[in-house]
Image (tube, rainbow, N blue to C red; front, side, top):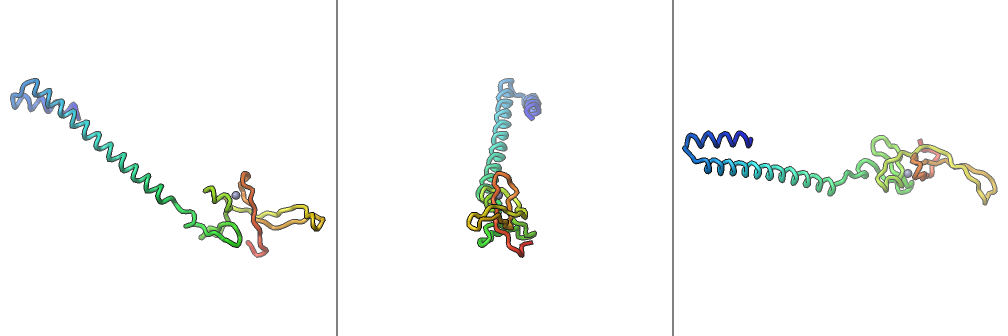
Length: 137
Ligand SMILES: [Zn+2]
């Protein structure tokens, strides 16, 4: 573009009988205009990117749109497929499905081993579990 601008200036210069210094000043202004256009275009691109970023930060995708928290159960369920998701993980923005498991432990009061049906978080770092009801499928 700048080269073409320079050539055009020279062409106009020869036709309008402009002096060499006038042509060079036209070239200079064309270079300046080219840079100015470049700066403006870059500014617009940067401004739009910032705007999009700000919008994204202001309206983060809400997990609560896809999941419902079951207060009485303590975990989340997917609105469409009903899959159970760990609330502890959800708090840190991680979606971990719960898996059917059995909690085994020693009951000191009763003095024997017992087992309880639970929903266990699949994430090793979390390892949270929730009570599983007999009619949970
Ligand atoms: Zn978890």
